[in-house]
Image (cartoon, rainbow, N blue to C red; front, side, top):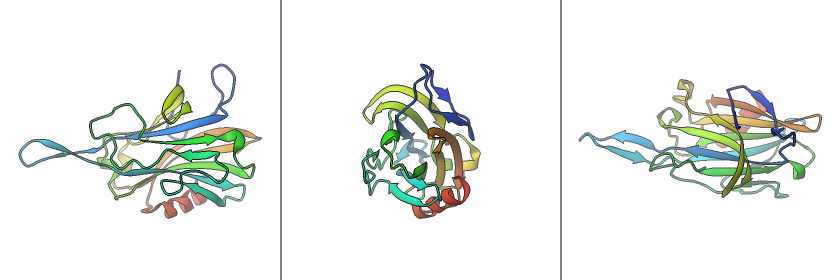
Length: 203
């Protein structure tokens, strides 16, 4: 059974069978904005959200950023599936719009934090987006083997008026990786600002 994460919950990456996730996919899924027309109908507005992954060392310095403009880390241990420009225009199809894959076993040993953030590229308010969620699973960007944890990151009035959020942070303690489901909106407008916010508040 997948864990339904709550905001602020911290979990280790141990599965039910006692083994530990050595590689995880973080899938991000979101919907298009539904707008009502003057004539009573509705239309869908495409939503361009950008999932990004920032690697930090023990001194909280950002060492690499994996995002739509840089789809893999230098050693290939973190990979991004590519930029989704629309969201689920036809309603929730149950598939991830963007997937970030983290191979913990092959991360640079200096990396102690792996932060996952979401920015609205066009400045579309999270409060207007019908759904957004992440799930941590075993598999590949195109094949889900087993869902480990799920987290609804947008079903909260606090997201209204914001265009950036910190989804969560993988962090290393005693050489064991854990996950902190943060789910906080930030006042940032750009990814560069969100990188600094994570550094100052969430590590």
